[in-house]
Each structure stands twice: as C-alpha cells, then as structure tokens.
Length: 451
Image 1 (cartoon, rainbow, N blue to C red):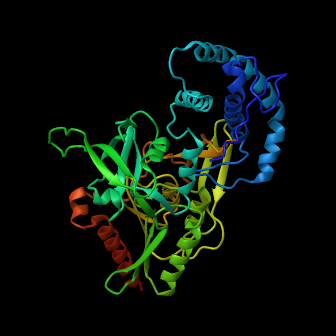
Image 2: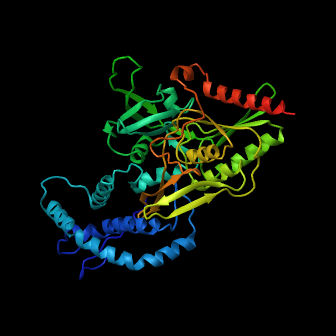
C-alpha cells in the first residue's frame, strides 16, 4: 500500500536528503501522531454537536450540516490543539529518551505511532471505539462489499472471556468444515494471543489470502455439568467467502409464507429486501417471516429502509449524544405491506442494525419477535479515514427504540423465546423457524375466520 503519511523536515535540511544533524523521535514522528490524536479530538467535538452520525460501518452524513458544525467549532479546535500540543511535551521527551538510548530493537516510527494511538484508545473502556491500521482498515471496508477472504464465520466479542467468540460458522464453509462450532472461543491466531485485544484487529488477523492456513487456538465451553475443556488448535484453510445479502423461500403447505433471510445491512440491503417483500406479496403471500439471526448489523440508513417497508410514517430510532442533543430517525418512502402478519427471527447474533429494525417493529406492534435475546449493541460509531488510510472508529452516541428503550448490554427480548441448541443445529433442525411458522399460520387462520 502506498504510504501517504507526512514526515516533518528539519529547518536547514535539503528536502529528500538526510539531515546531518540527528533528529529527535518527536521531530521525526510528532506530526503523524499528533494529527491522528487531534483528528480523534476534533471528530468527537464535531459529532458530539450532532454534525453527522455513523452506525456500525457508518452512514453518509449531511455534508452541509458537517460543514456548518466544522465552522462553528474551528476556534474551539484551535484552542484544544494548542492545549494538546503542550500536554504532549512529556510524551515527546519520553520517546526521545527511549529511541535515543534503548539497547535493543525498537519499532519504527509508524508502528510506534500506531501503538501510541491504541494506548490512548485502550484507556477509554469502549470495545467499539478502535483504531485500525491501513491493512486492518481494508478488511473493515470489505464488510459492506458482500465477499471477502477468510474462514467463513460470524464472530463477536465475548466480554466475559475478553476474546473472540464464534457466533455462527457458515454452512459448508472452511470454519464449518474444520469442525468449529457456535460458542467456540478463539484465544490465539497463528500463535498470537487475541485475548484482551479488540474484535476489529482480531478479525483482521483471522482473514487472509485464499489458500493460506490460519491456526486458531480454540477453547470450547463445556456442556452443562461437564469438566472444563483444554484449548486445542484447529487449522483452517482460508477461502473466498461469498456472503449473500438476501435469500428467499416459500414456506407452508401452499407456499403461503414469504421467508426472507437478511444476512447483513450492506449498501444493497434495503433495495434487495424491498424486492423480496414485493415478490412475496405479488405471489400472494399471506404472511412474511424476516430472519435476522446472525446478522451483526451494518449501515444505519439501510436499517431505516428495511423498517420502512412494513410501517407508515413513524419513528424508527432516537440517537442521543453526550451533550444531550437528540436526533430522531423516521421511516422513509412508501411501505410495501403494513398489514400482512409479520414475524422476525432473532438470536444472540442479531446486533446493531438488526436490533434497530427489530426494536422499531416490536415497539410499533407491527411484528412478533421469535428466537433468543439479541446481542445488545446500542451505541453509534463513526469511522473516520485518516491521511494514511488508517481508520479511527469512535463511539459518538447511543440509540434508543421508539418507546425509549435502550438495549445496550441487554438486548431485545423476543415475544416468543425459543432455544436453539448445537445438537438441534447438527441434526439440521430449526425449532425457532418452526415456531415462527406456527405463529404466522395461527395468525393467518385467525384472520381468515373473522367475519
């Protein structure tokens, strides 16, 4: 990747030539680090004022509002920048001593800068605020493109174990074929521990070129009453993973139920889900089952679009910022169906944008939720690309359902709770979908019996 970082030049030295006078670490590397940290500071200031919001992987913001907020905060940023420069004087001193005297190998300036930024971010206590190097940022961007190279599994962060947990291995993909299961904890990747790191950097390590081997150190939680298991290694050959956005099926004896599975809220999710609902209605479907299980989220605007397919003009979610400001998101466009019986399937892998849709439709009384309690991610992030292609992803707000419920850390409780064990999954059973189908058929029969 091209390195676009800027290096300061020392007064009197010819551009493109090495200075004869040794430069301190601060002189060589202060600018990239300071710009990155100031970028984080300015970002928090601008977006705390409601200038624009990103959710999950981010959303397009209103450029006019961003520009206005930037102008309004320019004077304040100048003061804060001066304060930050003064407060970092001790940091430069420490780096000068370290790089000038340490007997041993030291990271280069770029790596040192990245580590310093991660040190600041690590003090925030927020796993959703993170810094990504340019390589990690490229992995992050592929999340909304529908395909990537990796092991083929959805993962999340287990707060208790402080490491990566497999939420769902994709059927007949490398992780599935290697024997990985839901709930497996990944302790290390190629011998490098990921415990105590963060989800984004761990995912970047799991992914890799097609045909390469990832050695995952796995801890499998024991069955109830069984003895604790020991970690073991699993070798997984990476492949190109085609992650579908939407799949459809006709369920019921007469195909009367339109089944739609939405895997991710990428940039096409709203349009593809709309097409699927329209197709089901055109075929004469009497009910809709929207499956959001294992859907870890994505773009906020797409969550609003999907919700809007089933309701009239209504609130979808509320965002609240640190300063008390609030932004309300309402449904957009014309709904496809506001009357057909609707059931949403959710589980512990349904997070973020999935929870926005489920929470809004549950609050509106429009849909029945079936399955397991959702993940519980009620915060909003904005990803900001920095000058060298790295990304600073910052939590800038929390969101609430239309009925003012926060789901952060607790999740949404389904109207009908249905467990789904690994044994049932291995037997190719799906009690959650079966129960959702039963619920829809019962409602359809009840409506048909009305005079």
